[in-house]
Structure formats: structure tokens, C-alpha cells
Length: 392
Ligand code: FES
Image (cartoon, rainbow, N blue to C red; front, top):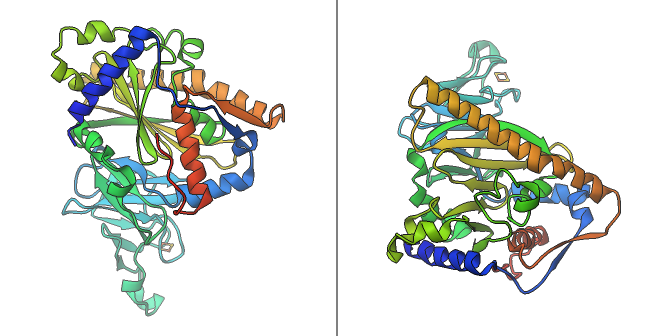
């Protein structure tokens, strides 16, 4: 699909929203039980039926662009190792030695021809195969072919590395994302520069994620940071399976698009309008020319906590030391704003939900992104693929 045409139509809709002070609306208000954010059984089901089943975007191609590059990380308490072999193919494994389960790589990024377990020194190839057993004559006979690293389904698309946390599970990105991958491809993220990340934590992962899914709160919560650029409560939503895209017109959309021929409106992202790309269940990508922030949310160690990694990318790498310093300052600023303005209120919301004040919360007709996310969440939790899929 040519997203430029589609984006042009979306730009026209967003211009209309701003001129007429309207927004995307669905036909109903949605109620969600408060315990959805506090209940341990639900939290465990979300991990088992969603986080361990769907493709999770765990890394960017730009984090590990060269043969031998790897990234080791924690994903919902599971140690994951992604490695690019000498042919350029990326694989994912559980970062667990087949001798006595120590990690074979320390968390973070690196480059190496093979992985050496720090406990007793067994070595594994970039393809996960067991290469060497330390002092094997003394250790005794084992079949090396049976003792490689446990591989996870992994695929690299659109500059993003997707992993399923269940070995041998089927993973079909085209089916999961529909034609959203074309839009993601068009960003060209594979050729961007990965600048670094910051980590924050907060309340239940869905409380935090809800904050990324609507712009209803911009005027109240972000009067100085977001509202000057983006009007509150003015969003356009498009669904692609469980994932979706939010269009946010800027206040200056009319002036920005006026001198541009209509057929070029679809190529004006960040000039008059912005997109936030939501990849179910836990990613929010906000593309901006100065710096792009990609929030990656994970359920934390208990139902009332999340761990969020804020990743930063830009088309070009740091130009010089001064630019590098400015980028570091910008990453800190974005982290501080995200934490101070969105995550702090999330902690208060968690307390409110646990207080028993209300049995349910409500999402308005304007908060369609939140409704859609919770509808898909419930669809996965029902664990019955014959149920009709939610539609935007
Ligand atoms: Fe890895 Fe022993 S646990 S070599």
C-alpha cells in the first residue's frame, strides 16, 4: 500500500478536526474494571497470553548493525540475547548457558565472534550452537548438538527486531501487523542511528501505556511541553490488527499545509501533523526530526509496577562532541518530562485504583485508542481465536 496517499487523506481529516474543533469519536463509552490494573491473576494472564505469545519489538536494527553485534536484555524477567551473525542474520536466544544456566553475555551491547559463559567458560557461536566445553575430557561425554542455546522466534523488519518469548511458537508479522509494516518500512529506521536509552519505572504497565494512547490530557497535564505544539483532545486513529496509529494535528496545520500541493500532504509528517505509532502490546513510537523517542513498556516485578525503556534514535548520528552533548541533554529532558508529567500521576492513579473508590473507570468516545487497546487486550485474554476481532 502507498502510505503517502493514505497519509494525505489523514492529513485532510486532521485539518478538518482543527478547523471545526472536533476529533475521532466512536459510538460508545467503554467501562474497564478497576481491578484490571491491580489484580494479580489478570497480570499473570497478560504475561502468559500476551507478552509470551505475540511478537515483541525488542531491539532496533540500528542497535546492532554489524556482524557479530549483540544485545542482551531482560524482557519480563526473561534473559534474552539477540545476535547478528556474519551473514547479517539476526537470531534470538534465551541468554542461558546449557551447562548450569548462567548468562552467556552480560546485559547491554557488544560485538564478539562467540559467547563465552563466565561461569565455567563454555563457548557458543553466534548461531547459538555449543562450540566448546571447557576441559571436556574431564567433564565427560555430551552431545554438543543437543546443548545449544534455546532459540526464540526472531525476525527483523522495517529496522525493528521482533522476538517471540516462547520457543518454537509461530510468528507471522504480516498477519499480526497487516499493512502497518509498509508504514513502518517507509520511516527507514534501519538506516537511522541509535543514540541510547533511559529507563524509568512507574505504575501498572497499562496505566502507563494508557497515557500514550490519547491526547485528551495534553492541556491539563502538559500545558507547557506538548500543548503549545499540539491541541488537546484532537486525535485521529487507524487500526492495523491490534496495533494502531494516532495522528496528532499541530496547531499550525493549516498554515503548514496551505503552501503544499494536496498530493504532497501525505509526506509532511512533523510539518503540520505528527504520528504516534502504537505497536501492541507495549511500544509507542513518536517520530520527531530533533530526536525520536520509542517507549518500550514491560510489566514490572509486581502488578503495580512497570519498567519502561525509552529508546532514542535520529536519522543522523552525532555530528560532533557538542552535538553529542546536546543529544544527551535532550534524552535526559525527554526522560524527565515523561517521568515527571506522566509516570508520577500514574503512581497516584495506581493508589486511586487500589483504594476501592470506584469499581470501574471509563474511556470516553474520544479516547478510542484506549478503548481499542483494552478491547484487544480482552480479546487475547479470552484466548479464543474464533471470537470476532475488534475493529477501529
Ligand atoms: Fe555456563 Fe557452566 S554455567 S559454563
